[in-house]
Image (spheres, rainbow, N blue to C red):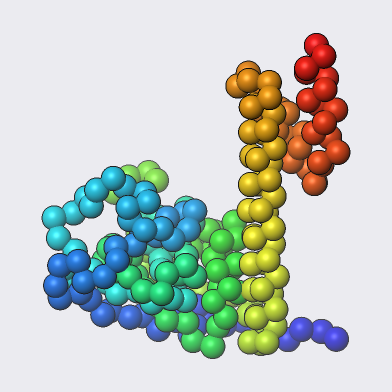
Length: 212
């Protein structure tokens, strides 16, 4: 059975929302970064602006695009927070007939950076580029039917969860080694533990260093 895909304009999948705050601290301040969605307080020790009146309101599953660093991957579907507010330096969109997990997987592909670059012009510095939004909305991407989007999105979400769990296990194992041998253990040992689940390797490494 073949999966039905079609070329769709990005603009046909998005509905820009422009609802803004009218009072100070109307909701939780969020930040969109290359590595994901965060509370502003998780990235910065203090609010860097003078006021957050006029900030854009964000809901869960909204797509957020940076106006200047989109080609670097500064874009996310808000899968983490039920609601919040974000700087008007970003654009916020509701998804139209598009699975949030599928869209998140798509925007985080390396080749999607090139997709965004096609609608970019030079910005104020070498690392900043301005988006020509009308051009961006005209660009096409391959999209399957919604049922397949859900399956694909769930697959990549589970993969991300597995990678995150594995990374935490590697750090946990490394901490065990450091607590046993001291902090002089190199990160090369951590890499030895990071290929698959290698619990069996942990004890021989510990014994080797203790007997040396």
